[in-house]
Length: 269
Image (cartoon, rainbow, N blue to C red; front, side, top):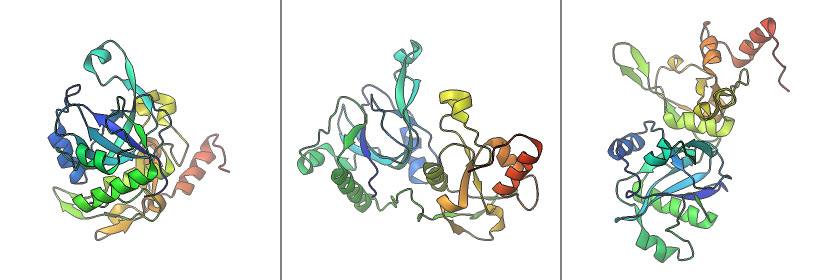
């Protein structure tokens, strides 16, 4: 685990009913995307790529049921409480990129309080900062218990993609983790034109962008390893379509030249 900051998020079933928890568990633990924004209290310093642990509180069994990476800066989104949301209130929330999720705690509150007595494991607000050594120990314990690969979003991470699927046409698996790690490294602005969905659409588009494979996935005959940092780039929907308009697929630099030839497009420094 790098020196990324780590935070303890909280969930109280008595205050918010997680109605699709079973579906979420299936999706997360089978590598499928599960979009979710979670309250981060008043904490505004959280950054993309920070680590989170999710603590179940309020009723037994209590303890850590999830961990993963933060996928956005804190955003003022509709409140998670239905009554407050109906009243037009907002709450600071971050995009959550779950890596492990369980119905019952993987690390119980009793164990946490015994092993780390100096940490307040039942905070009133979500997203309490955790000491790095504690977060490192939690990560190691979860890896031992679950045998999941909890590798950091870094350049050396390689993800498997490209296993052909026979449906009606041949389609290709795309790794949701690869997408997450690409965005964690490169951000949400289009690499081609610099378009930001957040700047145009506000919070609605804050965590949206498409991801482009520099070498098309269909060109690989078999499942292969990709480096999310060097093989993928975030792009807006328009540029993504234009990159694939020609055969072979245009490079990012080639599309930038085409844009410059017909419009005012600043040279990248």
